[in-house]
Length: 340
Picture 1 (tube, rainbow, N blue to C red):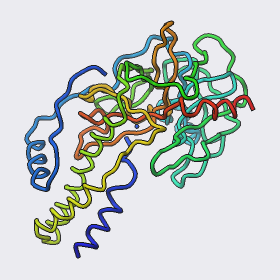
Picture 2 (tube, helix red, strand yellow):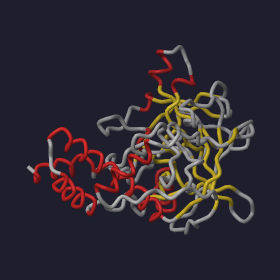
Picture 3 (cartoon, rainbow, N blue to C red):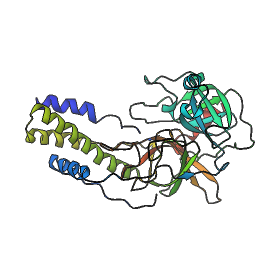
């Protein structure tokens, strides 16, 4: 019985990250090292009043981020009579007149297959989701090693049917070179993603965060994974009358096998309190850092994040940072397609 329980839970809880995709201090998460710790943590959390963390930061000034674009589902556009607010799926950036950079998971279906190029349109040239220019896609290029389970190599390109020519509200963004070191330093993320109250903004939002060591993400996510393992075990124990010592043994085995969530192709960024973060709908958008000459350079792509146990909101939780694709590992891959 215990062996089957452990195997089942291992398959159910230790796989892909749960998706949702600074300078402030934040409260330290309670460490969960045993089933008893888990029960105490759940009781403590149940007694705390709900807080109102913000996610979206502030509205960006019109024209401040001219490379930012939004991707829209054409089927939803057809069904809603062209409603760009309801059809927004992801973000992206203009890197040349002909190419948009985004996340691979924005361009694949539930089976991991690349969508046809007419499944999405690109909206550019305005911060408002209701305005701007509509650009058709001619081709989707998803990284050949993209893993939809771990979200490793979460990067893709969209070749446009017609070039985007520089003009009001549009421009390209420079990318960090191949192999360049991305420092642990302040950064900026922008997008049309979910706000703190679960709604989506009609205008582009910008948020100040910090790039931090990948180990910071791994630590917070491992802690959350232990909570989730404890929750599943406790529920199964209640249903099947499994003794606590057996649950404790299963917990220790599973918890000891929780490994790093991030690969070297990923960046960890956010703030400890979780008060500012990318969220649902921001996927594919840019993580940017400012060069010494003041130029903003794209260093990452909004990729994924882990949800907190029993969370009221999907994003912005203490010690759970967002994860971004590390562009310094992909400049040559991008150039090979764009220049080829």
